[in-house]
Amino acid sequence: MSNNKNITQMFSKEAFLKSAFPAYFFPLIMSGGPAYFLNKPELLKASYSTIALPSLIATVICFFLLKYLKEKQLFLFHRILITLLLIVSIGILSLLIIQIFALWTYLLDILPSAALGAGIIGMTKPLKKN
Image (cartoon, rainbow, N blue to C red):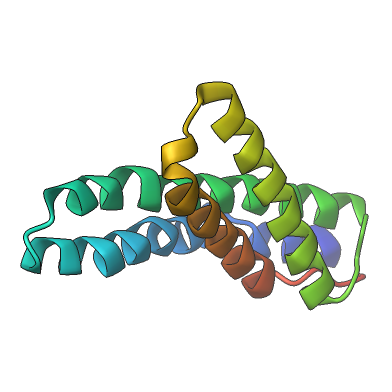
């Protein structure tokens, strides 16, 4: 019972929203703010599309993947190792999506942003044995 309660609290809707909102808004603010003040419309457009969205998508994927791994008690490694595995897997998935949709011009927007989202969720949601 305590195991399910721990998983439920750690991966609740509230915890999901606390992870998802910063994953989108921080990259948006960090790239959109300077773009606005420097009058760079192409960077401003990229800040809410190809910079902030990959971070949000990576966070959502990693959140549900970590929830599944926690429930099944699989791959319960050290936090840094799990984070590195998430970053590599999200990087591979990002490259696959870039290849499929021919988004090579956005490579340096998508990859770092997705890796940042995966890294943050990996470090904030540690997997421990129950």
